[in-house]
Length: 394
Image 1 (cartoon, rainbow, N blue to C red):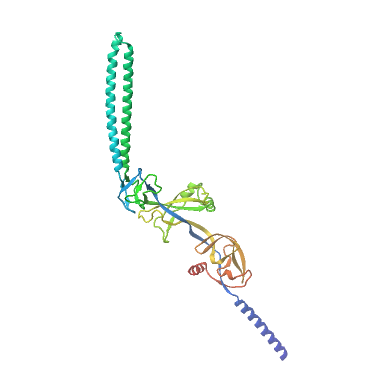
Image 2: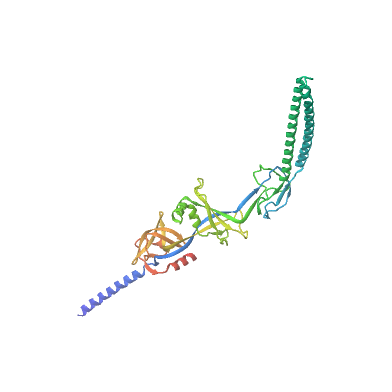
């Protein structure tokens, strides 16, 4: 009897130790945060680098060659259309104008002489006609007189033409003198002054004297690649490119210091053609710039809003990649199973799932790089927001 009790006690002790071993083995599995796949509305934006310029940039060039006599503006100065910016030296032009005026006077004298000659020749013809009719003189004399009249009229016409040429030359020189006053073509801001007082400038110069830019509004130019353009065309509302552009919501501009420009812009147009050199298509966004913060040469980032409705989301930290394929670990009781997933996007530390997971699936939330398929874990339930917040802080 005592022997039987002893065997029973030994058996119970062995079973108790076995249960403790199993419990210790379970508790010894590493802890991993897990969560359920959720559906959310996610608001985000497309971001593209952008180059900025005023809506109108006019190069200021001389219409005639000359030395800059006066510079009447400074860089960054606001100017009005027609405002005088530069004066060129006109000494040579003034001399040319005086010479041209003398040519006009000389041509006028020639016209007057030729006019007098025509009158004399006409009188001679008129005098000979009745004499020939009365056979007092030969008709040959009348023909000679008529030839002299014709020649005199030709000389008068030539003299008048020379006078008109002289007048045109004079007017041209006067216009050139007028062109020595260089004015602003538009309302705007003066850019860099590439030439200063005393510099010789010419219409053929490769560099303008300066540039006047209207920056009351600005254009932000950005480009997208062919794949992005196809996605835009296939997924944005609108029957054609023009309608799609018109339906794009107001656009933000992130400035170089990371702040958001106070005005929102409107997508206006696209080239609609792929640049063979870059493989991209250019778009243009217009922004009001009443404060004058932005000008030619600024850079920034265009932010076009987009929304994913009822999207399946998990933390980015729940994904890992091998040979270009993205995976996540599903949790099956206390084991993990690697699952291939396809992502639509990565937004705000979240991965938006296209396929591979469904709502309610339990997955490992982070630390996936240390796991292997089939590993045992001690799952610890967490929320997606807690993981995203911790992941962001890190």
